[in-house]
Length: 306
Image 1: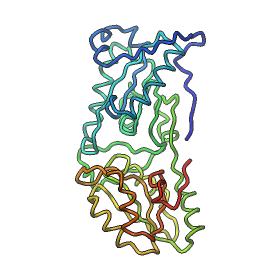
Image 2: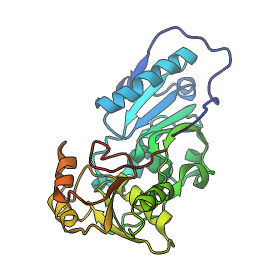
Image 3: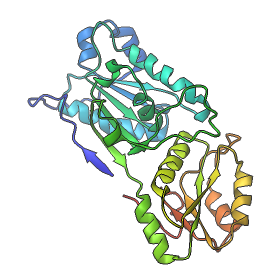
Image 4: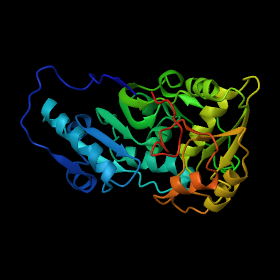
């Protein structure tokens, strides 16, 4: 992971008062929506998922606490895109603009927008309007590689977007900081070839989610043009969980399974906790490696995360 510093919005003479003043979106809508100074001094936190979820709450708490320690005069506003699945993909830009529109008027906008989660980050960086590109933004809970969202004429099941890097492909946006995860496909392939030099066929497991599509785009980009390498997809956009297991069961031992993402299948059924055991039992001697960290509980032989 990499961290780059946020220093654009906090004054050097800020002080701590120990208060954790988290303002909900409802309170802001009622009490602050017409206050231009309050909006211009605020930090707008946009989450991909419901803010009541445990992971989101655990992300919010230390951030809000630290913001108040650095500068207690700044109001933290929390909004959620309420994302539930890839089926909502075509509505995400509108959802994002609706949230931003509540805090942008008469030339005023938040001092900082914090984007948490792949859906929030990918959606914001898919907006074309210059007004959004000028606002300082921070990104988190996302990998360095994302994809731009498509128009509504795309068949999501066949969609093959280009992989993009947040740090190099979005220089027209005002990205001032964040924490990103990196998936090193090249080094993982080097490790696999040292252990299994004869392998040339790789099956990438990805699910029916924006994260799955993004992982598939990254691996496709990194493997393009590599000699003696064949990439196949076990794609949750078109396969059910049982079909995925059948595909793995039929794989011969001169092939390798690459674990990318697997949470939800084509029927929008979410994976249960025993899925790693079921995958391993489907083909016990199959070489399995993780490029994302999933399967480190005994399913994967190994994998390099950076």
